[in-house]
Length: 202
Image (cartoon, rainbow, N blue to C red; front, side):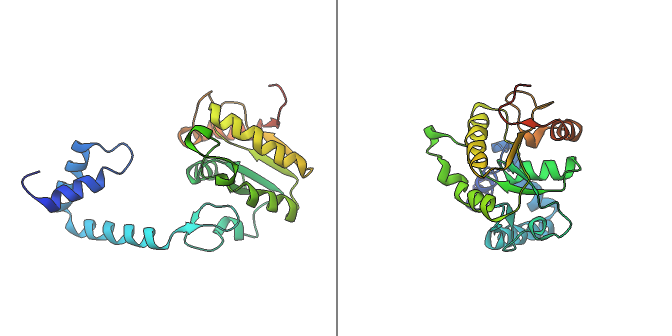
């Protein structure tokens, strides 16, 4: 673009973001260079800090710069409830859109044998340890209602049942094939309050 190797590198780097194509990346790069270099430097510094310092919570596996995230460390959470989700974005959607105040476990994906994603990649050994070590009354499975999400929910439910813990599944209001991250707060609240025993017909 315009014969500049450095600008081309910036445009290419911006294209790694979801939903950002060549034109959008070019527009972002030119905006930062033409009108907002200071914000560009702040963005670069924030990205470096995040890439270098953010890891995963040892307990729930969400993204955090701390060994144990603030939710897992909080004394105000209901420690008898554990909500299993696929991604940190799903946990954030439930946290921001509902009044759920239990704990979380983030799978960081879903079972997908074709993509080489098996149980070990989802941290299910960590989940099993939590089920053994913690005094949980209920595990709420809040994976997406896609084929992969349903298969993952069934697999997780079997692990939970082996530990004698009640397992429920959010059901009402989440459309088939829907992603939690893009579900509105009212629907999420209804889905959590209307959860049912896993394996039970609606």
